[in-house]
Length: 282
Image (cartoon, rainbow, N blue to C red; front, side):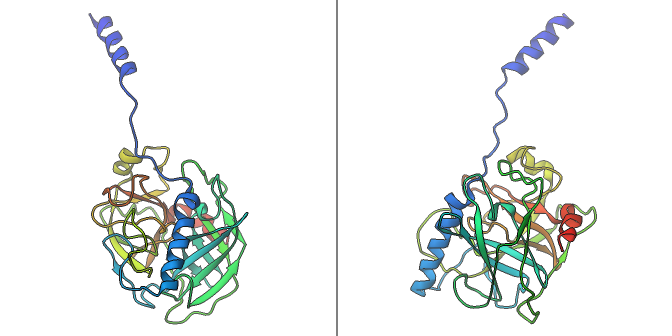
């Protein structure tokens, strides 16, 4: 009887369907970044500034997030894409590695936009092509999705200032962090909302709960996730800042391919896991 039960259990396990995890977008520039850049540019050219961006968030004011930088990426072969970034010193900026390279696209040069509520006009604009991606960045699973950009020295003022990097073993689960970006306020729709910098407060969740949604190939120890609800990051927020108590704890990496209004978690590169690597690039 015992042998029969063991065999039956193995047979049942073999017959069980594999776990189905939510897919993430890996062709960021083709599906999101380049269309977003065109959409934002058209908005700014139309001077239609009467709405909002990050889902459920609030419009930022100039100087509220002096560490944040918009990112315009010129792609090899033509085209322009959009991401976010974070100023971590007078000449170093942190972003997601996929903002520079994916399986489908490779950046050629980029412009960091500081002290501006808009992407295509105003502020301090610095061009660079010096990007160091993490050596273990995986373009298929978006693990180790982090990169350091070297820029010319920028002077600090009330609207431009670097931010401290998280370190140590704090997992931050249960805390409420703030995400900053120029991304959409909805997964779909045309030019209907204002293209200005926005922010949203999001609860940090455990990696275990996040992995139940995306799987352990995407959610690893160096990932940090926020729970989704009627507030979330959205398309175009990649590379941006996740901040807690004026400390950078995450770099925006991925969301569900199904869209940002499904109430699903969002994933970030955990800055404390990469603290030593980041500092080695400074």
